[in-house]
Length: 103
Image (cartoon, rainbow, N blue to C red; front, side, top):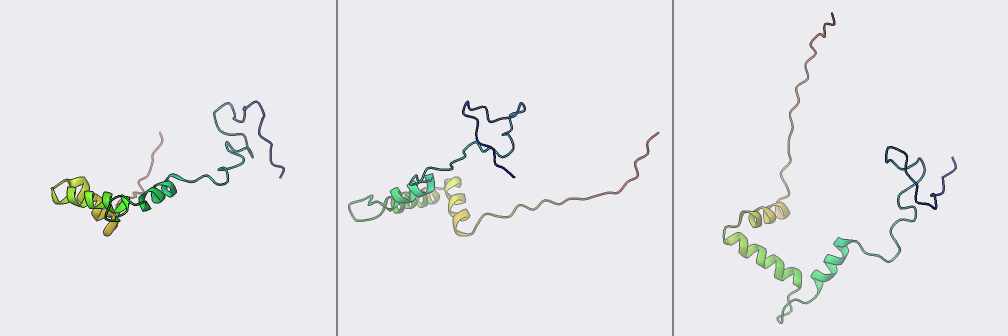
């Protein structure tokens, strides 16, 4: 199957807004060498944040722990989610097979 080349005019979508078959909205992908937001945040977090040598990430996490000790529920939830894992949400479904009568 031959892959379509993106339309130079930028008209790569069907009338309903979907991309035309075989045409991506970003045909070349992410540029080489660019970093994702989590990569950038990890890099910043590894930088020294205090005079005693703690990283910025350490400083932030100590602050979150301090908020949890002060009773901030979001901080307690944040710590619990990352240490114990998020609780699974269970959904119960009941299927009935009732007759459908068409008159």
